[in-house]
Image 1 (spheres, one colour):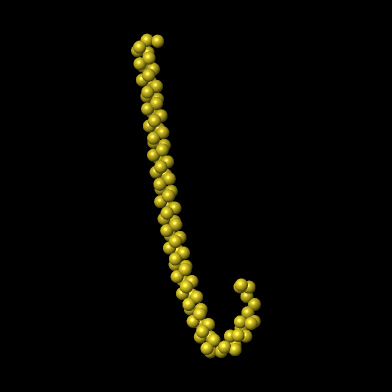
Image 2 (image 1 turned 180 degrees about the horizontal axis):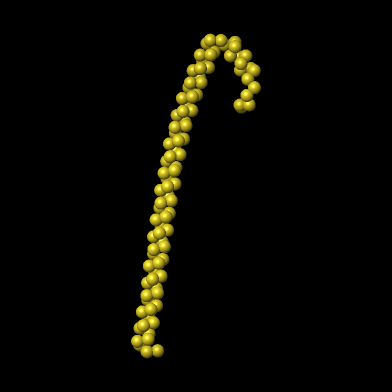
Length: 94
């Protein structure tokens, strides 16, 4: 092999290697961008769900307080009748 043939073969191999490096870097950059976007979407979803959970907790606390107030009100109106209702309640709540 002559020097010119070695040089042209090396140039071709270097071009192929450079193209492979560029393709690999592009793939890694795209993969990183996709993972970043997915992570951001999951974070937004988690934030939204956390907000929904806090809203549900607030509503439940308000409902429990209102139920306690209503039970107090009913007990003061007719304690005997409330006791009968509690005894005959056949709901499956535990």
